[in-house]
Amino acid sequence: MTNAAIVDLRSDTVTRPSAAMYQAMREAPVGDDVYGEDETVNRLEASAAQLLGKQAGLFLSSATQANLAAMLTHNARGEEVLLGDCYHIFESEAGGTSALGGIIMHPLATDAAGGLSPAQVLAAIKQDDPHLPITRTLALENTVAGQVQDPLQHRRLAEAVREQGIRVHLDGARLMNAAVALALPAAEIVAPFDSVMLCLSKGLGAPVGAVLCGSDAFIARARRLRKMLGGGMRQAGVLAACGLYALENNIERLAQDHATAGRLAAGLAQIDGLPVSHETNMVFIEPRAQDLEPLQQHLRRQRVEIGRQSPRIRLVTHLDVDSDGIERAIAAFHSYFR
Ligand SMILES: *Cc1c(COP(=O)(O)O)cnc(C)c1O
Image 1 (spheres, rainbow, N blue to C red):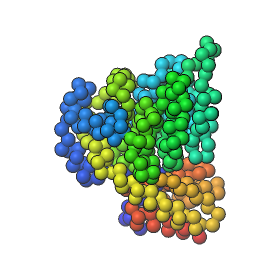
Image 2: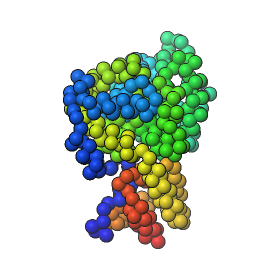
Image 3: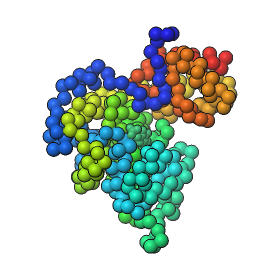
Image 4: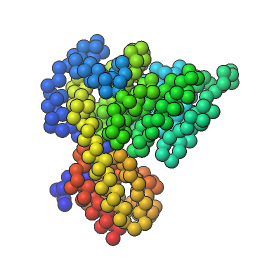
C-alpha cells in the first residue's frame, strides 16, 4: 500500500500532463501570441471555435480569467449580470466581476439540479429606471456541480432574455462532460449562447488554460480585455499544445470518468447510512459531521485523498484515476465504516 499511487478524488484539476502531452508541448511551433504569431495558439483557438460552433476563440490562462474577460466584455461598470447563486462566477472567483469590473452580480436561487427558470430570470430584469442598474447579461453554467443542464431549458432561457436585449454567457468549464453525457455535439448545446467558456485543465487534462468563444467582434473586444488583465502571453504555444492535444484525445474518454464515478457511487451506496449521489464525473457523499475528519485521515493512510468540504464531500474522477484506483478507494471507505 505504501508505494501505491495516490488516488486523488479532490478535483479533476489535479491531473498531470501525460507523456504524449509533453511530447506535443515539445514539438509545438511557437511565436509571439500578443503579435498573433503563435501558430499553435491560433490552431487551438480555431479548433475550439469550430468545436463550439462560434466564429472565433481566445486562449486564456484560466477559466476564471476567461469568465472575467467575458463579463468585462459584455458589461460596463454599473451594469448587471443575472446568474445562479451557486454558480462559479458568483461564488468562487473572488468576486472579480464586481471588484474589477464594477459589475453588479444579481444571484438567483437555483433549483436542486442547478437550473434557473425563464419566469425567474425575466422577473429579475430591471426596468429602465435611474434607481436601478441596467441588466445586461445572463450567465448560465453547465455542468453545475456535475449536473448536466437541460439544453432545451437553456435555449428557452436564452430566447426569453434575448427578446429583452440581454446577452447570454455560458460558463462551460465542464461543458464537454455534459456533451459526452448527453451524446450531443457541444456546438448544439451552446448554440443559444453569445459566448462560451471551456476549461482545458479540468477533465480534459491540460495543465493550464481555458478558451473563450463567440463572435469575431466579441472575441476582438475580449482580446483587449485579456491584455488589460495581464493575460497576454507570448510563446504560449507550449501551453496551447496541451489544450489542442486535450481537444483531440481527451473528450470521448470522459465517458470513462463518468463510468468510474458510477462505480464509485455504487460501491459507496452499500455503506449503511451514507447518503450518496452521482452525476457525470462527480459523486457527493454526506458523512455524519463527527466522521469527516477521521474519515479523511483514514483514507489518507490508504493513499486516497478527498476534499475538505462539509457537510457534503465532493469526489471527482478524472484521467489519473483508473478502475483499480477506484476499487482501492471503495475498499478504503468500507474499511473505515466497518
Ligand atoms: C473550475 C471552474 C472555473 C474556474 O476554473 P479555474 O481553472 O480554477 O480558473 C470556472 N467555472 C466553473 C464552473 C468551474 O468548475
